[in-house]
Structure formats: C-alpha cells, structure tokens
Image (tube, rainbow, N blue to C red; front, side, top):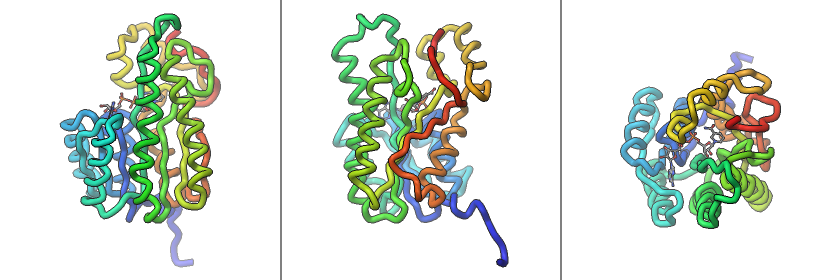
Length: 264
Ligand SMILES: NC(=O)c1ccc[n+]([C@@H]2O[C@H](COP(=O)([O-])OP(=O)(O)OC[C@H]3O[C@@H](n4cnc5c(N)ncnc54)[C@H](O)[C@@H]3O)[C@@H](O)[C@H]2O)c1
C-alpha cells in the first residue's frame, strides 16, 4: 500500500448540497463543513441577504463554491426556485439537508392555538417533505444521494414548554424513516436528533440570563452544550461516502443522557 488517507471517505468532492436555514448558527456550520469537505453548497434561507453573505464567507474560507439565496421553505414556489437555481449553478443535487425548524415556547398547554400547532407542523415537517420531493428527481440521478434532517431530541422525550415544536419534530422522524424505506437503494434518508446548541436564538426567544447560565452546564454526559460543528460533523458523516451504509436512522447528537426539562 503506497499511502492511506482515512479522511478520503469523508470528502464531498463532486457532491452538490442544499442546506436550508443555512444562513446562521447550526445551518451555517453544516454549510461550512460540507463546503470544506469539497461539496458545492447552496444556502437557502428566509433571510436572503444573510444567506448570500454567509455563503460568500464560506466560499472564501473553503475555496469551494458556496452560494446563497432567499427561500421560504413553506412556499412551494420558493422551493422550486431554489432547486432550479442549484441545478443551474452546480449541475445537479446529491445532498439535501433539511435544517429549517424552530418553535415558540408555550409554558401553558391550554394557550397553544390550533393555528400554532398547524404552523409548527408546516415549518418543521411539511417543508422538509416538500423540499425532499422537489429535490428527488435530481437525487435519483446522483451518486451517494442523501437527505439528512435537523431533528430534535425533544421529539423523543417528554418536552415541556415546546409541545407544538416537539410534536412536529416527532412527525419529521416518522416521515423520514418511512421515506428512507420508500427510497431504499436509491436515496439514503436520516435525521439527527440535536440537543441544546446555545445560539443567539435562545436569547432572542427571551430566555432569562439565569436559565442561559444553567444551560451552559447541562445535565448531559459531556457536561457542555452543543456547538454547531458538533452537528455539522455528524451531518458530514451521514452525507459523505463514509456514511453510505447508513439509512433510515435517527442519530442522537446531544451530549448524551436524557434531557428532561429544557428551560428549568
Ligand atoms: N439550537 C438548538 O438548540 C437546537 C436544538 C434541537 C434542534 N435544533 C434544530 O436545528 C435546526 C437549526 O437550529 P438553529 O438553532 O441553528 O436555528 P436558527 O433559528 O438559529 O436558524 C434557523 C435559520 O433558518 C432560517 N429560517 C427560518 N424560517 C425559515 C423558512 N421558513 N424558510 C427558510 N429559512 C428559514 C432562519 O432565517 C435562520 O437563518 C432547526 O431545525 C432546529 O429545530 C436546534
């Protein structure tokens, strides 16, 4: 053997990825790692200006193509536009990361409206289904095609305060496992169940300083909150040839252990 490179299987050279919600935080981390591994990356985000700016930073940092555009993943027309733009720019789509998602905090279960439940389902579940179906003709043409979702550990444990979000993320798990079976031997489909990754989003959601301090020392097996790169590195494994024997799985990336109550 002349030489051996264990990282070769993790290279994404020749892959074309879409990362939804990739303008900041976890999604930006995923876009950076995929581009850093050699993929051409489209960042599709509601915030088009930030998508373009983040993509430019990643392209400069990695030397690989990374572009951004405005896209509301709850809009069928926007999804079709981002798929067309990706194919026009990169010649195909091999890798879809459905990363968009979020939900409001509802400490009082009686105060959650039907509209809020439906909106959460549309944002966290239906958008990923629509994106997947819009990309499917191109994924079917690609080698090592995959769909990976940013799921949440809250989908798999009693989730106080974020019932509408956790319910929709649980539906995402089921939808994607079923899709993995329906697309067997054609497209791999997986979800990462993410734990607490402290971002500016928590502050914006009005989480008080004391709670944020406590969240910096969570009761998990590693004793620290997650970082975007913790999730992004797992996304790379699942999207790259190194993950080509993995499909239909939900992978916990959350520091280990059980998360019982998020906000205290
Ligand atoms: N941060 C955490 O602790 C955590 C924990 C578990 C799961 N997750 C999941 O990880 C994913 C990313 O989380 P984050 O904390 O980085 O989120 P974030 O809110 O920081 O970023 C989400 C991005 O998605 C974009 N976006 C929002 N709505 C959109 C829409 N309709 N169409 C297109 N783009 C839209 C936003 O502009 C933003 O850039 C989400 O699915 C979230 O549910 C996060």
